[in-house]
Image (tube, rainbow over all chains, first blue to last red; front, side, top):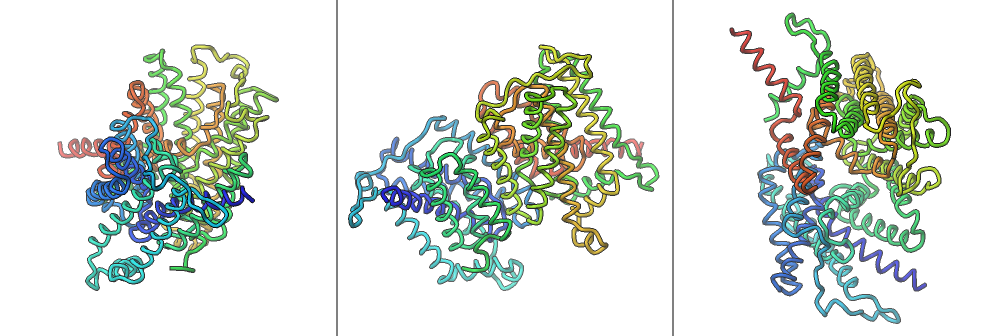
Length: 289
Length: 340
């Protein structure tokens, strides 16, 4: 029983981190049709900026979090202009894969040059280090915070896409970019804003998840397969699909590590193949928002 | 931006003897050139034979990827699944039953082809990101199985103790790697010849048709998916032989031979050299591993930064890879001669 509770808490927290990072990828993939393998690198950059801000510059955790998201977005916006704009559209997915792998390599090398190959930590404030009582059980405050942040992100994104002017334009451009442009929607600006949203979410996830996905230069390559799996199962562009897929993968992965540590990976990928074989466009495509 | 390059690339790809008068088909020159350059490297760089051997074996692997990607249009990040399967099959055969190098190559090719046919039939209906994910997942499963079957594969310690018998019973694998290199070079050249036959056969042309326009192929009565599965299987044989070749020449098979990074690296090498040309695979592999040998000696991260910038540059400015750059240079010279 104790184990089941531990699996549930850790699995949900892990799933929420996967969700925050992957949903940015899912939104950019859904709108710009670009397979962005550098998304993990953006999350890593966010984590490193926060680590630097908290450890070397001495900022409090909240300020470091905000600085990390803002700086990552600012740093990646020129990339959208210079690189990504040339590879939008599903026709040249090979060019997308190669360009973003190249970008990932450059970022990995740059991070290693600036911060060195050692593991970096983002020190948690006292407020997040203890445990919260939840009826008879107690869960670590950090896990509770991550779960809360994930839920807030989910609600915020749902509100942004379903209830605002921006969301209406975005959904129009996803459905038919040419028609949206003809109706006077400035798709280029929309792409820029969406790209910023995606990288901001990646940076947020990178900072919040630093306890679960440790920060080191190979972060960008090690976890990108995981993020892509979430998007492929959830269906590109689907928020609730990403959330469900991320939570399911998080819980399965955590349960596998607790219960059958020897075969976790195997079942994870076997399940992935079966799901994608039956639902090639993602399990949740066309069922939810 | 890409239209000129794409047109040039197409003109280079259509190597069928066309009724274009002066423009003869010169594609066959590439293969003897590879053989000559390989032999020249044997005399010129006698201290780097281990590296040259790895280049030759990897070039065969990248060639298999070129068959899939350049002639079938299948974007895959899991080609190493076939390479790893072939390498382990050859290693297991050598350790347990028969260590003749040709038997090892046959075992590797058979295993690689089989796994490619089975997984290809399962996954090739998908496209885009879904297909990428499926190929990655297949690679990870192969790696995981190899990791768990410790009794057969040695798990994470790698499969060692492969001691191949002399080639044809005559040439022993010496400690300087001379036999290894010449054997690998010979297999690579034979592989190039066979691959060239395949892509110029009616089957190869049909595959190219599927790549350009699957709808039209099905309209004239072909089945795009079965062509692609067959091509995937053929490329799996090549990848399996390449894996077996690595097992023969290095004597060890590790888990990383089926890993995701190896698939991605092969893709990078292929694109550096240029897709859809066969010899582009050789150029790309030699350039990639040669530069790697020089740069990674100081710091592996320098190497990553360099190759990353190089990749971005290739995608933006030279979409056909190094080979298309050479062809365009050649085109410039021809243009001058015509005018003179």
